Length: 275
Length: 279
Image: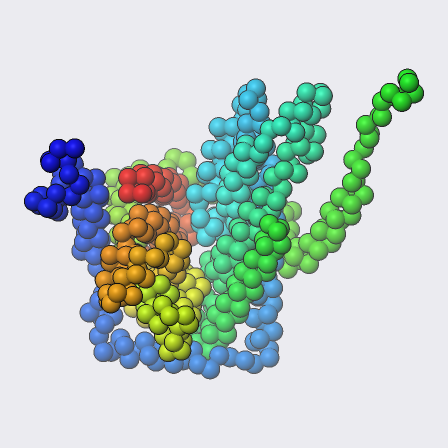
């Protein structure tokens, strides 16, 4: 080893801070420029937001949340809306799981000799379903299905179908091909090969994806109502619009409890599945 | 020995048939109350009146609106969407960094010798509870609240993203720091380094790639949610989309949906590339 190659020679200066060949430097510069440009172009009303008057109105606003409204009649309404939200998320996820499996079949290449003509168009459809957020779906479906939880359920199902179909297709393609090949060699038809060889292998994975999406969907379902698609969100938007802060606080508490409950339920189920 | 060699006929039907039918039927029975609660009436979709309205709306999608005024407006709103996400993310980072530093277990001096002292323990629990609160209120609800306080406009969107993502980043940063190798940081702390020094020289070097890649991924998510936030009046593409949908102006909706696809795909690719370069 020559003297020049010695590890960390004491006489060498540290590398310069910016080097035109260093990607990370350019990326950092780009990030800084993006952030500065963002703050520059958005007409953010910081002065107004940070003023004493705004602080006072904020404090008053928060103060009005307390106490939450606990009249039995209103509580009953919140419980109904919570149930509606829960039902929307569960049904939306179930429909999406069903549609996801149906779309994942043409979207996956089952074995090496499978021509899989439908693979590209189906995947395109799944991507399109997936890239429109639930809230936009809800806005679009309100026109066809009318105000109410049905539109919300369909919106959740549409977005989640895109997500689950893609994940299911990956799971099916990645399943070990041995059992399926054995059945195919015996002359068993494609549907039965899927039902008795591929499905049993991937079922735990499919279920765990579905449960994970359900956790996401319960959050989404809680806010979908803001555009008029039923559930807790509709109640929230309604009472917040009328500045009924006590009632808003009750709805928010209901929302947090529901999300926490479903999270722990799904966590427990998934632990049970993987054990 | 020909009798012993007789082939066993394979079962002609599914041996687990009865159980499968039973569980499917049970699932359908359980599903029934859900169908009632969500007013599930697919028939309503195909009634003549609703079919007519949706058909008219769908027909109005073509051709997409391509007027130069409108395109300029869409371009401006798209930039605002990205800017809201970026500004919100940088504020979230400002919020998450101190939360992480204060709440991570690795940087506790008293935990070096067994149990953490009571004061720091409860401080950490309180900060964790704060982060849970910040991230479990959906960003749309935060946006609704801030629209009431600061009025319609991007400020509400930026604040909503900052709070939700601040809580999320704080939690995940803490988990990343704790799941890595903490030996170097603890040795530094034992030898009298300050917590900030232990963080900068013990934890940051080995976790920097993972932290950056998670932040970039979250930025991508923030772009998606800043579109949605527009629906409650927080500015950007979502607000325009909401307006056009309410006016049943299909051409404008289609143009904005296409722009939205492109934006999400672009953010997706940019984030994948960045994570590859930096990871």
